[in-house]
Length: 404
Image (cartoon, rainbow, N blue to C red; front, side):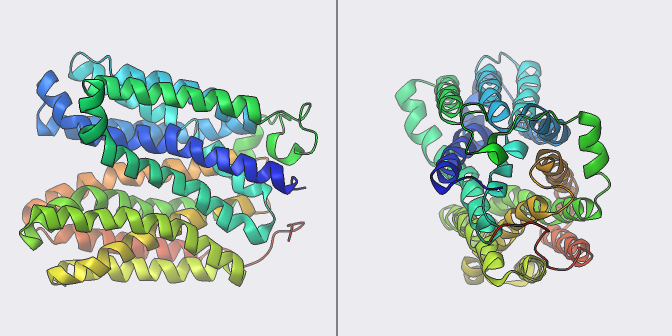
């Protein structure tokens, strides 16, 4: 059963805002604040790398429990209350006094974000099947928009205005808590919103049932491994690309500008690719095709002249993010999973994806010390591995009882 249009589109709009403020901004704000934080706390580059890895591994570990919690407590309550947890953990980063405390708070921040996104990404499941890809793309674009805003405004605009990197984190935490309040007030449980039982249901789902059902679905594991390879490569690419492009173009300004196209194109890919799959009613075919495009773009990078990066980088961003978003849609559309267990399934996929984002930079860094082009070869190989996982997914089909 799907909810009436005004309710589901309202929830999608609010969900996109939550994804922007409670996931995208807390995830991406620290790299642009690291320079000021490192000067105050006397941190080295190696220690900054450790801090960033703590965010990723915290999210990887708690994504599955976060999704299970959402299936257990219900969609509306879990997302709203988790916004307050994210706000608190993000604010704790602003109270750090040394490396040890900031390391712990970065881990907690990643763990808190993992309480939000698996359940929130279920939002697409309340739409008819022909609209699920578009809905999921719009929702996930919120994360990318949050990344753009945090990167563009935090250090250059907000930090001078608010008086330091700590106050920037406090301000974002206050905004996150405010969004949580708005969500809880406007997204009601079934007793207050009987038109929307499929979206805001608080039917108790046992944690053992969550694991039993989701872990027995082969497609969930294939999508998890595929995302570990493809989206994990994207996470690694975002960290390595600015430095590589600065060397390849011999211009930091040009290198940073080309890098920025990776995120801009990612927003387009996150919306366009799943929408295309909806239109063609062929998600597996689109998934394999776009993965092949991602492989070609990344594999060609180490051999390309500088001018070709204006094409290759945005193509890589759009295709890898398109794959990630379409995978989320595919999880919700899996008959055995459905809306009831989608949080647990998306937690598994998200956890594996972030694990890939944690491991791949660790492998790519030493390879770059040997040869600056070798990381691209590694990531292209992983994308090819992801395509192999997607190839074993069940054929394109509409799940039994799908709407539209």
